[in-house]
Image (cartoon, rainbow, N blue to C red; front, side, top):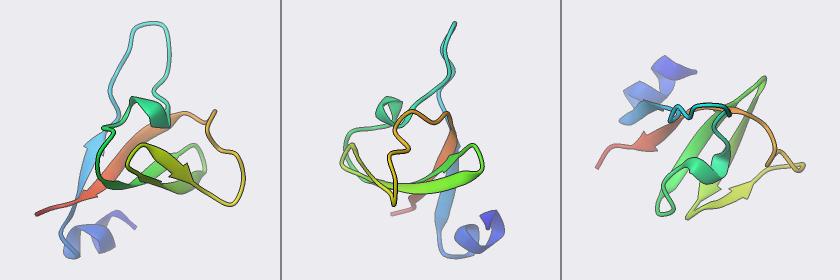
Length: 69
């Protein structure tokens, strides 16, 4: 999936690293549209709100793709 998104001008951003805890979707920037890579899952985050088919708000985030402007 990564190379397909790169060809569409999306760039990969690794999740922030915190001491003592893993990154969650709410640690991402509050403005913008992102495709979030979670443990065995993907979701959309738009302006700080997660959009998914189930409640994945507690899943660890590895990083996200954002559209290059």
